[in-house]
Image 1 (cartoon, rainbow, N blue to C red):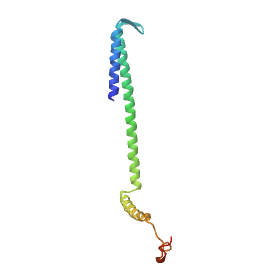
Image 2 (image 1 turned 30 degrees about the vertical axis):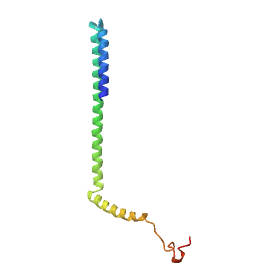
Image 3 (image 1 turned 60 degrees about the vertical axis):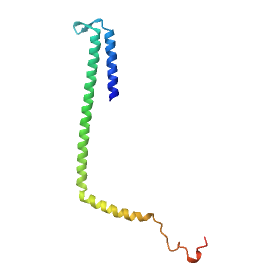
Image 4 (image 1 turned 90 degrees about the horizontal axis):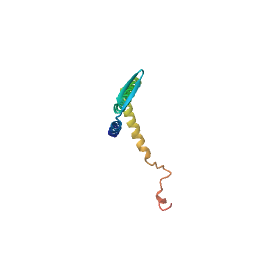
Amino acid sequence: MQILFIFSLVFAILVSIFAVMNSDPVTIKLLWKQFEFSQAIIILGSAAIGAIIVALLGMVNRVKSSLKIRELQNKIKGLENQLAEFKPVDSLESETNENDVINDNIEGIDKPVILDEEKPKEGDEGQV
């Protein structure tokens, strides 16, 4: 954000220098009237009007984004309410207890199981 501000400031300084260097009087024809202004005023006025237009368009975009965000947040709340209707809070606690029991049973699965047929006999210790 600071880089954008610095860039805007440098651009404004360059426009101001350009306007001061071109300060000759100029005739502007607007509809049926003619006006005589300094060229510097016309340049600075045009730059200011352009900045105002860009700011207004940015505000419109920001308002659209905030409205979309509000709409999506309301949608999320509605879906959470629907989820709460399907799944009461009490069932969540019982599910965690059931999951603990299941996890305890799963922990024993990693241990190797030795069948009676695979156990070495007392006399077979030296044989491989």
